[in-house]
Image 1 (cartoon, helix red, strand yellow):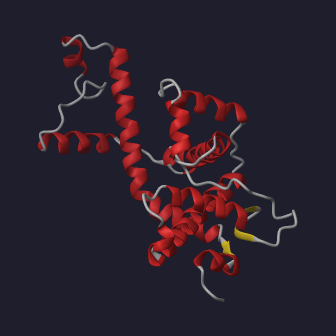
Image 2: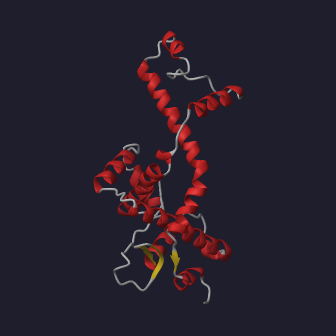
Length: 231
């Protein structure tokens, strides 16, 4: 649920001499990075500052994670993908309804994240997911052979009984009282699953191409402050 994001974003057109990460016209300032780092540090059951090596790795990992996020956000922006406040509010309410009473607020407090920051992170995640779906998942073709291979593999492993989808036992499904609506749902779920599997395999090459197209600029001087290193 907690997605490191760019809470202190500014457009490059605005004067900012202390950006830490920049991709296209999106930046993460040193102050924004500091806030993200404090949240990450709060997740440790001990003072990570007491372990210089682990602290350094935490800073570098966070910089890498936010850099990758910037690439996806920049690519989404070029593709004209946006997320409205209405979208974010709806997603937030959908998540919150699964937490009874004030447990959701307590969880945020335990993770040292304010509600406004959580919502901004949620918006970023929605944007990225929307872009991945459009630019990667929706472009993946699922063939009848892909479906057959899936059935045969799981049947061989004893993990799967062939579903009663349209082209794999529709008559058997009718005999068991399975409706066409249920059949369509099963088939849809299977296609989503197979598309996700293929997307996962294609992701490395896909993201590498985006990294080349949308390079991230790192302000080493500002980063060195967090690494506690001299220039």
